Image 1 (cartoon, rainbow, N blue to C red):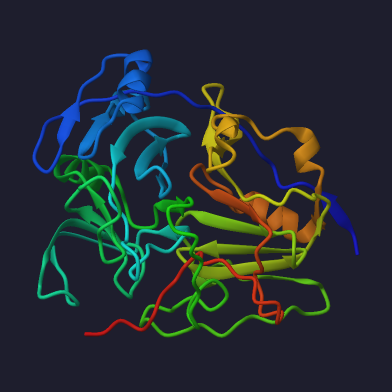
Image 2 (image 1 turned 45 degrees about the vertical axis):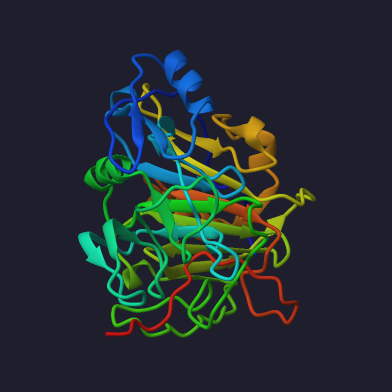
Length: 334
């Protein structure tokens, strides 16, 4: 089997803010320096917004449960920060890499007495979403991520279906799966899609299962596998050689630099905040080896906004009970 090094990776990171109140008080800043200072001093219900720092490019939303903070990146540049309130004990917000499945500015809960969920952006079919809600300064939701009202409205205006949302942190040490999670995504009717089986060629590639939208590439050190999802549907899977003994999880997003070239940039997860904005280096790229044909297929499909999750969690039912939720879903209840 011919093996090829790497995937193709890179960098960038900056910041800023602006807006008004409702559930929360918006803060305004005119420069990255002011933005940093404002973001570091946020109190419950406060937020900063500066979309003009990076006016175009793909979005990535990162929710840090340990700090109860959400950060919005556009083209790898931080453009907004808000305080949040995640799930309370017994209703913990799941961690993982999600995509926005549905948007509804005037949504009402089907689970909790038709409670209003303004500017709802659904992450799972069993009820987890981003939306405007109460912000007491600690986790108090039923699993959703509550955002300041005006911040939620601004965010709703710039996101699109399929946008990537990373939820991580230690406010809850919680990883959950279901029969319709990472390895069994749902189809258009909300039913589990059968797990693909690797053939003799040691990889599968079927982009026609989900032709458009951002890619999420999961690199599992435990399984020595790479799985490619698009809109929560698995479109590719390959054996891999992951020569990396790092026990942590890392998220890397693809951006386009001013010179027009692609760059992969780290998102600073808890425990790795120093990585934020750092470009993926050649040494790290060379720790991953893939069948050349699979590498070429993935490389050709890459677009700005695509995400790589490097993890020690399992991406297969290997009997070792090590899984991470990347797309958690159940059959929708009418």
